[in-house]
Length: 245
Image (cartoon, rainbow, N blue to C red; front, side, top):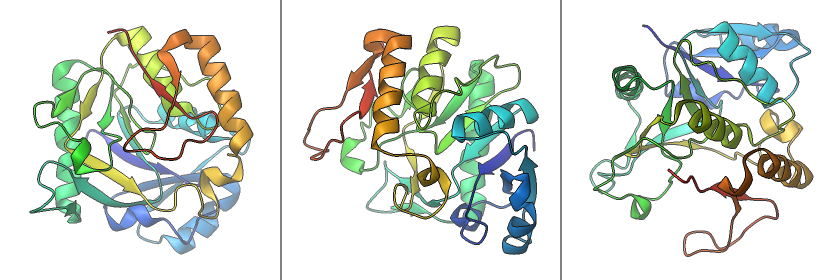
């Protein structure tokens, strides 16, 4: 396989949910936790990253420096939601099908000549537009992002938890296009509340600080979220992207 499927993880050696959906998942954790992860995930390859890589931006940067073609999945993916056939097949749970979806999009990204690719951040079928199954510009949630060799992209390691917003903007600045499959959503479980993971460094203040840094870097492309029909509660500092192209 030309693409490696990698899951960055910390503090969850016995709770890597994503391995239930993806065979051959490579789990990347701090070097100090490698033995714990090997015990908790005996069927998976465990790769330790240097201890000085602190925070998700630094870890993701190490991953894209280490692997050529890579697709990153958060360690708490519990289902792949089929948005365009929700009533008939709400979730894709078969490992072979999940792998096939990833590989198809990897190949499509290669054919299009893009370096950054992934799946929709929509979570409800009512948000899906049948006439827009794919996008070439937009936001890809960090829970499912792919990079192709020679992408020339890098993370701003000052960013605490908005690494995906930063990379979406930087990719548009550098390459102008990406590939997003809007038909499928990789759904996380207890993303903001589970022990370990990003919860070790993410809080309300980091969200506000990241939004300010993003605004300073990319200007009005970074917009503050407002209450909508689909989102009744907005946390201070939450943002969305509005690209001019």
